[in-house]
Image 1 (cartoon, rainbow, N blue to C red):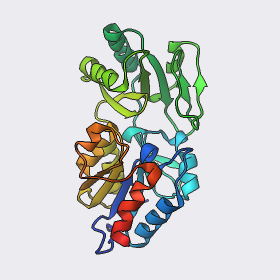
Image 2: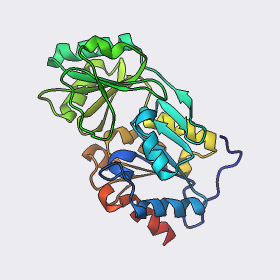
Image 3: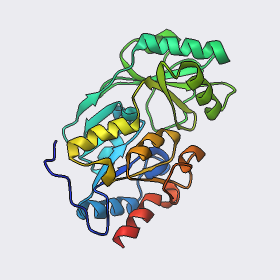
Length: 276
């Protein structure tokens, strides 16, 4: 799925690529996209812009959303570790996480702050999310498999580890984990109760740059929408970063613009400004 020439957007819309996060950004409660947001994206595509989903979710947890949108483009998944061709139903790129390194990182974090609860996203198109002892799943729409022992998490290749702590909040857990293992793994906060460990160098900017290169689009022609600290690299890569009203303060601090919340169609509000 390649493009020899970059798309030519409308003169009133200076961006050839619209990159949208999902949770807290494009999606409303219940993993739904409003008719208004759907229409705004359709209008932008008709004017020559391309839309690309950039999400922390791995492919198995996002395909139902893409199918609901009738989405046939590329999707950047698993925090940038995967580039998925929705039309062909195949991975163009995927990076797994070394399971021994994951265990070492968890051990170092626990030596600093006591027991943490862990889950993993397995690698592959039909992989599962395994939930270890103590880990609470806050997203009711994502299927999971609970395991009885920590060691069961490493039964098959993985692309990320998700952490929770019984006392520390997300910001403090992220801070401590970065201090302790930031030289071994990438630590990011992707959402409420969602602190993640992945291989060094994996982030949304890298995945988006890889997908955009396939489409023939540069960062200078990209507008990005997000809500959490894991969107900061994507904002740095894109020409313009738009944070939702419900965004984490760290993303707000680097955003070029603040729009309405995901529940109030913040993406549509920005796109409609260009297209009337």
